[in-house]
Amino acid sequence: METTKIAFVGVGDISGIYLKNITELFKELEIVGVCDLVREKAERAAEKYNIPKIYDTMYDAFADPEVDIILNLTRPYEHFEVTKAALEAGKHVYSEKPLGATKEEGEQLVALAKEKGLSIGGAPDTFMGASIQTCRKLIDDGFIGEPLGFSAAMVCRGHESWHPDPAFYYQFGGGPMMDMGPYYLTALVNMLGRVKAVTGVTKTSFPQRVITSQPLAGTVVDVEVPTHIIGILELDNGVVGSLTTTFDVVYNNQASFEIYGSEGTLVVPDPNFFGQSIYLLRPETREYKEMPLLFDYKENSRGLGLADMAAALKRNRPIRANMEQTFHVLDVMTAFERSSQKQAREEITSPYERTAPMVKADVLGIIKD
Image (tube, rainbow, N blue to C red):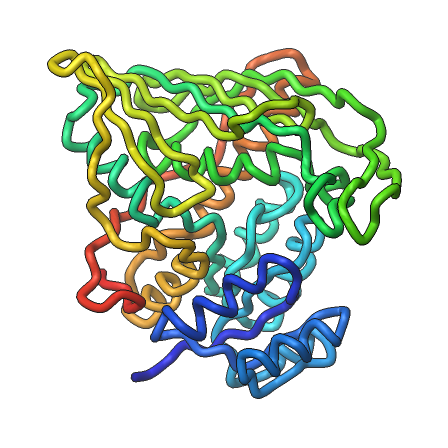
């Protein structure tokens, strides 16, 4: 089987699941090399997963003629420069979320990719998993009637109590909206369509955070970004809803996501996961009923979007986790702060159309169009 060759730039915490899934699950992908500023991380990954090449710099990966797609797993504030350099070197890129740290960064990357005739794919790809794909089908098939509204929230006290190096969550490109907003908004637009306007309020509740996790326990981090964001979203189809993301609140249930229709309410599972339970309330039953998952990829299948991108490039069909989607989500995420700063409704200018739903696989790990 012909494989698409992947080079990693960044071998940090998130890389583990990509390494595992690309080597064990996604049969049309092949890792040819890895690169990290901390060379020991690249060496450990190469040894564990039998990867043939370790690049001294990312530019060596970009120059490798064997590489088809650069997988950008750097920190959020580094995404722009790494993706830009890869595109300038003539490589397709699949980037972890977000596409960039600002709307302007996203605009530049999309324009450069189009100029070069290249593609950018991007996380999150959880919307391609069993849960959100099933939710989308239930909505499209009329199980909640006409969609009317939604309420979504990601509520927690921040990542400094468990993440080994959490400072970047409070720096440029970080914060709860940029970190967790991509999951909620990507799922939302895939289920319901384009966002046309946002009205938001943002605040930074604590100017500093103290890391309590090892190995940096006791380190004080200055907070540079909003950590409590709430807003109203208006969609092209008339649906109106609210989204809250916060790193400031003590809470025992991080995720909440409900979609309201004229004939029912759908409880959407945490969009950070691929295959959690879905519940539907309809007037006939007057109680929530768990719905069966109708699609593949119930387990942690990160890399699914990359596998789909590789298949799309080979077969000359649209990429599901494409740059139009990742840019639209970035535009919406950053609109909360733009709206808050000017104390007014913010129009969303980026285009977006839902991509094709998933098709059940004949063989798990081989993407079927």
